[in-house]
Length: 132
Image (cartoon, rainbow, N blue to C red):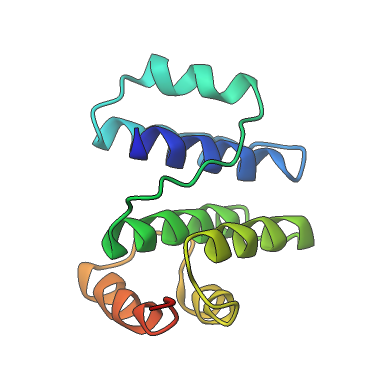
């Protein structure tokens, strides 16, 4: 359920600018497949807009993965739209992050693959922005 809700958020974000490019689509499909969702199941999510549902029982690691994946997806097309930034900031807030986290994430997240060390460092940094 947690991954499904995350996939729905990613689909919503990819639709904001009106054009879902193949890199965005593949990014979402790969996240789904990595968590055991068949590609055909993920594909069905692309046909509708979904409610923003943030599960209440997320761990800090899951919260980080939610926001990391959203920001990385936002940066894939190498264009940042105000509505995309607002969407990500809204989700970050619902996850319990302070607003400043978006500045750090947008500066540090790359649009392509990041090493485990880079992600771990970023996770440690963003943990300081989680409300206690």
